[in-house]
Structures are given as C-alpha cells and as structure tokens.
Length: 350
Image 1 (cartoon, rainbow, N blue to C red):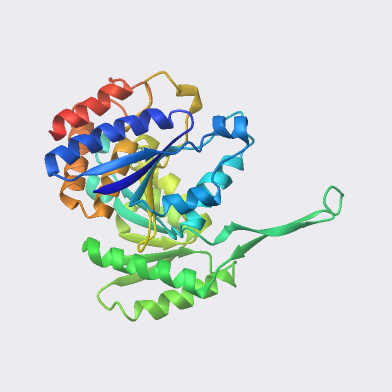
Image 2: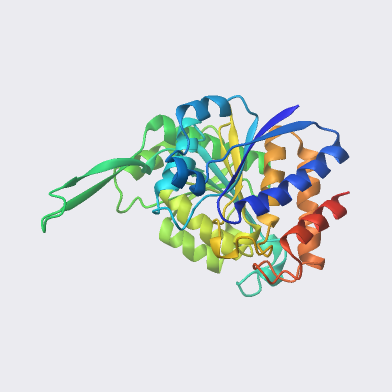
C-alpha cells in the first residue's frame, strides 16, 4: 500500500493532477498494486486567505508518505517568489530532495524544433543538484536603497552535497546502460571556487566508475550542443542554477513543457514528482491544458516506487498517443480536451 501525498497547486495544476490520478488508478488495476492519497492545499489562494504555505507540521506529516505528486505552483495574485520559496524550495530542502532528475526524451520528431533530429538523437538525462548553490538563499544587501547599493548572492556548495549528486549521476549512467557516459556541465573558467570543488570531486569519483566514460562542457557550450548535437549526451550532472536553465531548453527540444516531467529525489526518503511547466493561469478552467507531462510524472513516481512495469506501460502508452492521436503538444491545439487526453491514456493503457 503506497501512501501518496497530492499537492494540486495553482492554476491548471489541479486539472493536470486529476488526469494523472485517473491514469494512476488505471495502472493500479492493471498491475495490481494498491495506494491511497491525501490532498494538501499549499496553493496561492490559501496563502491569500490565511498567509500560510508549508509549515513544520506539514513537513512532519509528509515524511510519513512514500511519494508526493505535485501539480504546479504560481498564482498571479501572489508576488513572484513567495509560493516558489514557501512550497517548492521548502519541500526540497526540508525533505532533503537533493537530486532533481529530468529525463529529456523525444517521443515524436514532428514535435521537435530541431531540423532532422529523431527520437534516437534526443534521449538523455539531466541530474541537477537540488539543495545547494545559489538557491540556498544566502547573501546580503549593503547600503540598500542608495546609489552605492551592493547585492551579494552566495553560491553555497559542500563536498558532501556535490559528491552525493555526482555519485547519483554515475549510478544513473550505469543503470541506463546506453552510452554509459557522464558529462559534467559547469563554468570552471570563471566560477573558480565552486567549480574547482565540482571538478575535483567529479574526477575523484570517476576513478571508481571505470565503466563510465566522462567529459566536461561549459554550460554555454552545453546549450549550444543541445541545439546542434543533442545525441552527444547520455547523462549530464550539474549544479542547481545551471540545471534549472538547461532543463527548460531540454524540454523544448523534446517537444515542449507539455511533455516534460521531473522528479525531486531523496533516494533514502520521500521524493516528489511533477510536470516541469508552470501553473499556466491563463488556461485555468478551460480544459485545454496538456496533461501528458503530469501523466509522465506519475510514470516516474511509479518507477521510483518500484513499479517498473507500470511505469514502462504508461510511457509506452504516451509514446503511442503522441505518434498517432495527439495533433500538437500545445495547450488548445491537441485535438482533444485535457480530460479527453487523460481518458485516451487510460483507454490505451487498459
């Protein structure tokens, strides 16, 4: 019996979560596993009414669950950064979800903006450090509000945090068993303190994985290769900020935010799975948002829980639909409504 915490979130988040839960129910029947869910309201609307987001008692309760399924956060009536910090970052840090895992996989070349690229050309994984770096929120203002103002933002990196992320990436490359190659993405020529630590740690850990080929690419070069030669990548490991940036580009070359799912992973604790797109408030209530990313997030969650067969079946079903039925991955252009896409996945999965 899996205990799954559900956070529908804001905007279209509840709509895509609903479709993901429909697929989860269908998968549980077909593959004979049991689960129960509980909904948690950490939305912008609740914050506007009560001033509350995620508190310590919520964290204590969430630690009792096997996984968290998240819709999306972000309310246009709430100042940017409040919900993101009070929900996403709070959960990631408090639950020590130190890996952000982003598969970048093209399901249908018709949806790729790159010329002549096929599914076999775009199939890699980005392992992003998820609990340190610039997102730690460390820094200060000096002479704030004056003409001499200075804003200092600190990139906080520990040997422990860097090493466990790098080790996870090596294990990921070994488990995928494809090119068995790991690329360190950084900026060693400019960010000499943080990336000296990353490079040294990477080299030391690499010695323990002789079966995995390694290389290095500056983050700006990585974005160039994503567009020019994405087939050169298998697994990429990088820090919090660079990972945040390059995974959005990864989503675009795989077909868009409508198909991109991700996981916030604590290998020894509670992990959280989500579509990586935003809450898309302009589409709220119109039943036009693409739920496939949220459905793929369910697949990632099931794989993490050990239900590999169910996870593979969901992915196979989605691949079939985007190559046959779905006209576009963009909101309002799929040829089906949000709920109809969810129904199609359930029907084909069954």
